[in-house]
Length: 251
Image 1: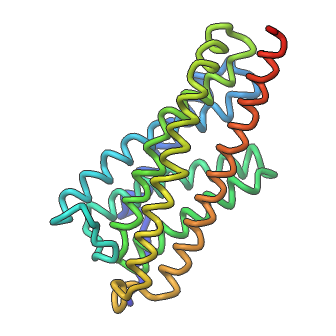
Image 2 (image 1 turned 30 degrees about the vertical axis):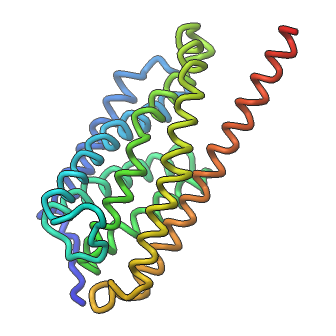
């Protein structure tokens, strides 16, 4: 197994990291300069927006181009150059967003752990194993397809105290976002991971992906899915409590 060194000056990774850095700075110094303490998190949402939808589109096109049949996916297939490009695109985003948390929110261990674990999966698939990008990119589609809704909802939440329009939009969007997120992360995601894990465990990856690699990927992915489910469950509980209190006041 050949380990490829990520030569930054000869790799798109540096370009992507610089691009997300520039977008973050634009958000912080220009777009959200009057947002007070929320400008940090708003800038993080901005780079997430520039990552999420493009990552979904790029991942889907890379899978269509490399796979004879998308159903089922060839999970342990060898990475193509297009796969590697999408992996590095996502790595560039996660590196900059991780720096955001390290600098401005150093006590947010959960998000930092999430980003580090994600970078581990992306980097091992890209630079060490050279296989399995298909499985990772399929999961990336499911993970990032909720991104535009989540970022819009989050940004509206930052402004709901100051702008009545933002508050109304936040309340309107909340149940639809929660439903969509719950379906994708609570149903489709687990089904995909079960299928992916079954393929690896059946021996499809033997001789292509080392056992330590796919097992560690599965541990990281399952943990991330559980955190997502718990997160949206907590949102549903808060939403239902708020609605119940409003009904009590009305009655």
